Image 1 (cartoon, rainbow, N blue to C red):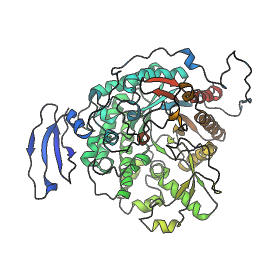
Image 2: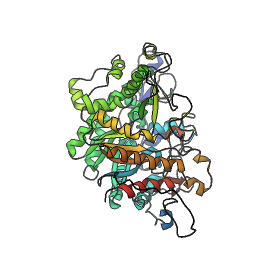
Image 3: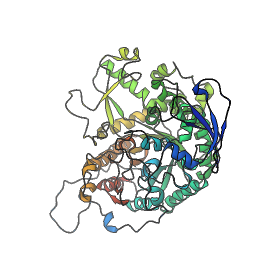
Length: 576
């Protein structure tokens, strides 16, 4: 492998070193400089292991460090919990009748599956040529960035146990598995020479899905940006990312377009662009003002996504390719005109940020454009045409909903004051009805204060998506789920596996989708988050979203009650 112009930060002032990567020797060659410490630059050769040692440090490993075949799944673990299943003994249990609504159904071709993401589940972070990502630094080096000070070094060991994981979801009757590729596994430095060992690994993941009649659904990017690209030019803040992501997409689509039909280019840019600015002192510095950084990121995301979409279509025009946005239904909290304006601001600064350019006109929604046009270049007419229409379905990660209201100081006072805490969005959110007494629904774990069960609003949300963005290929809920409250505190297996809030969430959410389907909304699929408990980014392993429990000491997997609740709704309502 070889990488040129590898820029490393020696975190002392603004000094930097530019390196050429070579696996053998390390030779320093001074270059010409001008006066001032910030101008001193050195070129030298550096191995991938050196790069890991300099920026991340030692990583943990697990005892299972080769690919393993799945073990037989005990039939006892596939018996649903009460009240879905009634054993012959003991008798006497009585529950209310749950009658089937004969006017509801999922179409025959409706796909339902589970999702996971590379850094959250794979582990094996240094294995077989993987390069570091920004999340290796964030979890290892930035104090309490992950509040539990945990890393993805081992995670669920999916890199070696993926065959078991796919066999288990197939045994449940789940039809699709959505996973992301590790960009820095395929391209250790984000660009340049390809790691063939990584491609062979993902070859087998995809082939294993097909072996078990599971639909593979692949995401190119789920937040784990190659560290080199961040240190070289600021990652998603640099325009160079567009070409690098396009080159990565060309590798991926040319490799698997004949086997994978469902693709997502980029996952939740609203969230990962919001991570900018990254913690100071750990990555390349930038002069972009902090409040502008998320929107600079988003601008490059749209251009990179559009390029990747067109690459995919040039390889195989029949592919389904989209990006995944995220958010929730915006509920006007009172009937005031100010709250109505706040709701529109929320749509423009959230879903509309990426959905309007890709589904409507290639450009930002009006209220967002008013802000970003003060510092971002306008999309050219050619760029607008290139971006518009680059999503075949409306793929949305829709967990919850929020009440929206104007800032206490008023919208105008906020938009005219860049120091306002809510600027530039200038709307407020709450989980409480206007009486400040009742919540929108049961809360998830305290580690996810943004998340309440709000399934009553799902039909209205689905109608809004269809009416506003009119996706020709329909709508897919590509992540949904809830963190079971205080699940981390449960220590015995029987208590862990009964997850009533999550079970109720899936039952009611899927029935809400059935309502929308009966009312003419074209919903084509769902992906439950997540395949099992994993590293929930800054929340670590303390917050649980999985429909399977994983013992992180032994890496044993167990189905939770919610797994059966999820599948059962399709057993009842999917057209045969």
